[in-house]
Amino acid sequence: MKKELFIAKLPHLRRHPQQTEVLQSHIETIQGNGFTWTDIQNPDRAEIEKLGKMYNFNSLNLDDSISKIQLAKIDNYDDHSFIILHFPPLAIKRGMSRFNQLAVFIGKDYLVTIHYGELKPLVDMVAHCKDNSQYRNELLGKSSGILLHKIIDVLVDDLLHTLRRIVENLDEIEDDVFDENKSTPKKISLLRREITILRRIVHPLRRTVLETSKNTQRFSNDEDDLVIHFDDVIDHLDKVAETLDEAKETMEIYKDTDFMLSTEKSNKILGVLTIIFTLTIPPSVIAAIYGMNVNIPGGIETGSWMFLGPYTTFIIVLLMSAIPAFSMLAYFYKRGWLFD
Image (cartoon, rainbow, N blue to C red):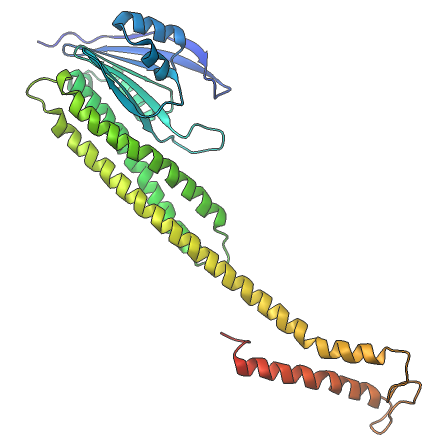
């Protein structure tokens, strides 16, 4: 017979060490079928210490649950397990944490989740559980182990949405790489960073979830095989990891392609400038010679040539400059240096 469900909320205020805004702390306690789910959002130390006394948790685990620098792990004890899982943030920005941490204490008759407000799917799950009694009964109708599976499943599904956004950005960058009018190095660098951060989250997450599925069966009913339930989650994580690995390789290809195309474009520009500069060498030489204060045929001192009229010397100088320039231009064309 299911026990009557109830919810209690305890609001508090605290300031997260990596944030400047004041975060409101909430404790939501939901009674399930033979166990209690306690969700603590934006916890402070007083709440955590009170929780530790209530359930006799290890003090080191309590410190880890509010720390933002822990590695994903699972610690097993006689009557409970302590699990830390990492999930990607909604947006990866400079100065922000590279992951969102979920700390879990799970026993036969309780499940405690500790996190900060960035885990929106979990926050929405708690809010929906509070507003919808049918959803509460479905979510908390079996065991704490099944509830943990559903929480992880929802967070992994949200990870799939992030993955789809990565793939869409890859397609956009592919178009931009071959568009000469768009600059892509910054986009490529930002997406490479995001893919790297996700890979650093997903690979440890898969190992921890796999270990969790094997070590939390004792917190489930005999008829519910948690390993089977978690197989679908692990399969999703495998697909995410595989897609991220492929995305990493694709980004390396796009980076190399963008570098090659940029280098080719730069080489073309330098080639054109070099040809222009080379063609100006003969006129520069002729101009330098006729600018000397020495007697030069056709110069002012020796008398200008007049057989083609008053501008004969000027015409001869232009021809002396143009003939070598056009000769070099013809040579460049013959060698194929002017056009691809």
